[in-house]
Structure formats: C-alpha cells, structure tokens
Amino acid sequence: MDSILVTGGKPLRGEIAIAGAKNAALTLMPATLLSDEPLTLTNTPRLSDIKTMTALLQSLGAEVSALADGKVMAMSSHGLNSTRADYEIVRKMRASNLVLGPLLAREGHAIVSLPGGCAIGARPMDIHIAAFEAMGATIDLKDGYLHATTQGGLKGGVVKLRFASVGATENVLMAATLAKGTTIIENAAREPEIVDLATCLRAMGAQIEGDGTSRIEIQGVDRLHGATHPVVTDRIELGTYMLAPVIAGGEVECLGGKLSLVESFVEKLTEAGITVEETDRGLKVRCDGGRPKAVNVTTEPFPGFPTDLQAQMMAMLCFAEGTSVLEEKIFENRFMHAPELIRMGAKIDVHGGTATVHGVEKMKGAPVMATDLRASVSLILAGLAAEGETQVNRVYHLDRGYEHVEEKLGAVGAQIERIKGQ
Image (cartoon, rainbow, N blue to C red):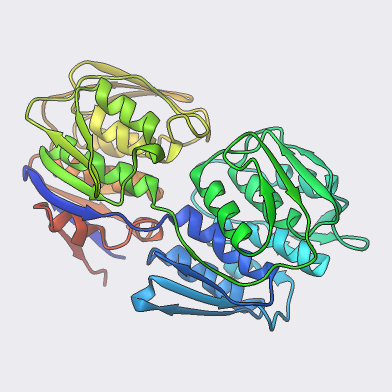
C-alpha cells in the first residue's frame, strides 16, 4: 500500500486550487438515474470514490465517461437495464445508498445492498427507510439487501426526519422530484451540497423550494430532462488546506474558497488568533508566527462546525497554547486519529465523545496509520510541523477524498512525497 512521507518544519507560501466537492459529486452523479437524457457535471474531483460511483452507475446500465482529465463527468441513463446495486460495489462507499431514491422514483422498485465506507460509526439506514415508507414504498431487508417496491410509484407526503441526515435528505429530495404530488421534508439537512443538488435538479426541470432551510418542498413532475451543472467547491478540502499554514506557518490562498461555505470554521480560526481574508480569488490564511490559541469545538449539522473537519482541527490544536475540548456529536468512534497523534507527542485525553487536547510546543515525526479519510489528512497536517519525518500509512483512505494532496502541498513549500507500495 502507498504511504505519504512528510518532513516537518517548512513554512508554506503560495496558492492551492480547491477541487469540486466530493460529497456533492457523489450525490449529483446518481441524479442521472432520474432522466433518460444526458447529465454533465463540471468541476468534478478526481477521486477513487468517484470511480466507485462510476462503476456502480455503469452496473445499472448507465453510460459514464470521464472527460477533460477527469474533471468532467458525462452521464446518460437512457439504457438503464438493472435496479440492483450489488454488495461488491456498494460495500466500498457509504454514498452508494444514494441510488435507492432515484431508482425507486424512476422504476418503482430497487434492490440495494446495505452500504459500507469509513468505520466512523453506524450511520444507520433506518432514516432512509422510514422516509420512503412515508412516500408509499414497501422495504424489506433480505440477506443484506434492501428490497424496495411501490404500488404505482412513489407518492408525495410529509417526511419528518428524526435527525437532519444529509444522506436521507438527498435521497428523498431526488426521489420526490418524480413522485406524485407534493413532498415536504421536515428537519431537512441544510448543507451546501444539498443546495447544490437542488440547483442541479431544478436545471433538470424539478420544482423545489426551501433548500438550505430545514423545510424543503418538492412538487413532483412527470419527467426530468438533461442539464450541465458545475460541482460546488469542496468546503472540507477548503478547510483542510486553510489549516495547513496555521500548523506549518506561512500564508496560503485557497482558490475558489468562499466564506459562506465555512463560516463556523472560520469563526474558530479567528478565535484562535488566525487571520483569514476573503479575496476576489478565494480565502487567504496567514499565520505570522507564534502558536494559535486553544479553542473549544463542538461538531454540529450545518451551519455548525463540520464533523469532517474535526480531525484536522484536532491536529492544529495539538500545537495550540492552552487546553482545548472537542466534542463530537455527529458520529461515534470518530477520534481514532487521537492515538496516532499521541504517537507523535500530542497530549490528548479521550472520553466517549469528548477529546481534551493539551497543546504542546513541539511534536516529533513517527510512523502512523490512517484509520479513515479525514484522520489520514489530519496526520499529514500534523507532520507539516513535527520535527523529522512522519510516514502516514494506509493512505488509500486519503485517495477517497483528496486529489493529489502531495502535489498541492508540495507546490506551496511542503516537503512531502508519496511512497509507492510494493
């Protein structure tokens, strides 16, 4: 397996272009199943998860082509010939469950394996199942597969989510575009990726109001047509690279970044004494020497602090002045990076969903192991400031969510390289 080798102590200066959002692209791609006309996505990130979703859609009979060095995805589902999403593909990625709603809406039935992905918590499918049952579907679990059927298609109704689940909101939003009548999603997630999906669906002819709020209303239509849609900027990659100069020192401009995507995150950086400037090209982060101040962080659904930036924030707080408390309220079992940071000299106490980080002046490089996607990049960030070499192993997790991380960080002055596995 590949690993990433980082030699710390190099200040960063320059600019990093932020890719399109992984979590948006993985939601937008299944939307092609809703129409027999072409859907083209631009600003698509080049990631292994995108390849997995491509394989899944192709297994259903969709045509998917990566153009312009992978930054454009051209898709068409005019020849859809299957409604079964097999375990061998779905097990690789949680977002695979997002084919369930479009298949139910278009074909009236679907068989979808229970999904896989990072081991950061249960992330149960019961919210999705309850939502589709509220729309008239019958869903049975047999041998690890969800068997979903409808009588005459999905019907509009009021879908009350017990938790503001991003995936369930996206799944229901897509399905409701072709349901009979009006569907109202209450306690809907508000993430920018959901707004991006709604924008794309509207371009395909859907009638949607309220995206970005906790109440979304969808008036079902008979059919959707094709469209071309640019994928929104990846706010998690944005936040990750904004932390790089904070940890390593220096100044980096993140091209394509928007304050509206990361307001709660920027509030914490400002509280920590970091300068963030919005420019006409993106967001510029400057650390003029000295350690950041300790801050307390609680992860929450958008617009709160993102759970997907918690590990990276912990890496920064390892070097902060004072003691910080991070409270993880979205996923259980999401502090698996803490023991690896401790190997590098961090002082962290974990009790259930709370981690107390006592900042230290120095950390030392060490061989560490990535346990999930965001944990892997947090270890790379820590390595930017650690003395000596940090070797991050099992970086196949990293490749699921960050394209060419060693090239992007290397271009702004980091000493970082990928070591190919045997």
